[in-house]
Image (cartoon, rainbow over all chains, first blue to last red; front, side, top):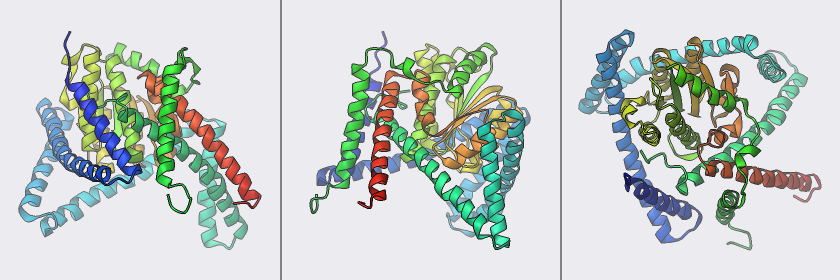
Length: 208
Length: 253
């Protein structure tokens, strides 16, 4: 049987450091708080190193796509070229140099803004698709509420309709806010449970 | 403690200890399988079926882990995505096209590779593992979505599982998946993403259903125990809110 010593060692590190950070948050003892700060600063440094590893992974993925050829190879080539050029420009001229800002303002920003434009169409398409795919009472309420809030917001801007404004606020600030809080309580409990499972070593996403 | 009031930090610590105690109690004291007490969630039933179908038809499962990293509330949904990734890589390791994962954050991308490798190893199929199957697709929300779309289109994906922290950009991924007629199942801690997934995904996980994924996909007993602990605490919070509202109505608070 192959014995893997790596997993228990990694689990021990994760559990001990997690417990110190958690206790340092709740209990104000100088030693715990100091250790917590040290661990958090290490985590920040490791995150920065992970970013470099991640970018190398991205590069590797696209080298493979370029080698494989096909429709996507051209776009992978553009991505790799852009990555190298941006890296060189930022390293040689600095992060806030005119050349770096030019790349940000005239390439990155417009491309991301165009995706926001596509997003609006994708949302509209999703709404239309909703009707022929899964029409149920909940979906009708969902769409009707969205239309009502949009229409009421637009109409209260142009016309003096205090009753409509009151009704819109009642929907968004009473019903919607109540539902939002209920969902957030459930999500928070789920997030705490997830964190505790990692802390107790039951979930080990790092054991590969 | 100051002036007789209980230190808020100690209430938090007590809450955590109670949570751990309840998890341990459900894990150790209940002899019958807790799994059979779970209510049916259609998204998980459909997903379980689709894993088998994907393996049989030689198609790929894709897990989009979002761009929330592993810290805070956003990170919790990414960690759930990693648990599910590990579980499905175990089940679909023998497929001609093993599962793939896309992330919008570097730590999440590295952990996705670890989760895939660990799942393959448990299935004695470590030879299937390729480091590029857990990939970083982009570092901003929209570049991430743009990076995921070719994966959905070109890698013979039959099931797209979006489990992680997303925002409105999830609509782009969902729309790309819809064009390939693949199954889309989504869940996020983010309310904007939940609303969009409600309209665009074929199956969605509402609110805390995302955090039940591990329990429903048989990731481990601890997942089921923690789900029961969450239920108990939810009832406690519900009663406290009701008492608070009653006291407020009575003019005491």
